[in-house]
Image: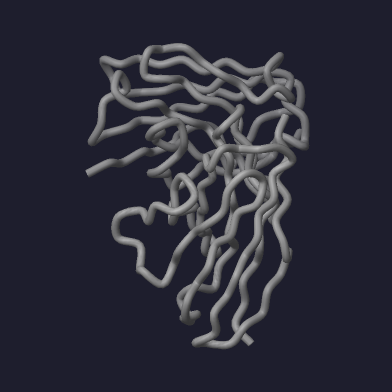
Length: 106
Length: 116
């Protein structure tokens, strides 16, 4: 099975900061990488699919990039409503979630 | 609009079988897959399994021996059955619509507690 490692596990940043979350696969996943946002007490929401495609209705401050085994979610200007846990997810070979990055406001 | 709603017992005794139903609307089970994902309290997400638009299924290898996913397309329902439940199966169970092989829309989830 493909293992997905997210870093950092907790990230604290200020409103307006540019924030980068990382996800590393144990083998090449050919850009079949999604990002989900989960706010406390809610179901996850799809933000980005297949590395860099913004899901309908998601603000443009969210973007994704990467290839091979290394992928990134970037928030260009952190907003208070972005406080959440972010999970990466690969669907190249079977399906696996990362362990999550908890994003907090300083 | 796309909607999914999970239903089932909130409490299951150890060694018993869990049966959950996902009722969907706004899309067809013959056009989209449905996935089950679970989340133990305070922990991360785990993909459980999926039933594809053609009716075939795939399961998490760690759960495969205990798991069955089926559907009734006439009722727009997907079913999850997991046997030999243990306390570590305590989790919120989500059903999700699949688009191009991965979850997009999610249900609100149902909390399942395994306890005597």
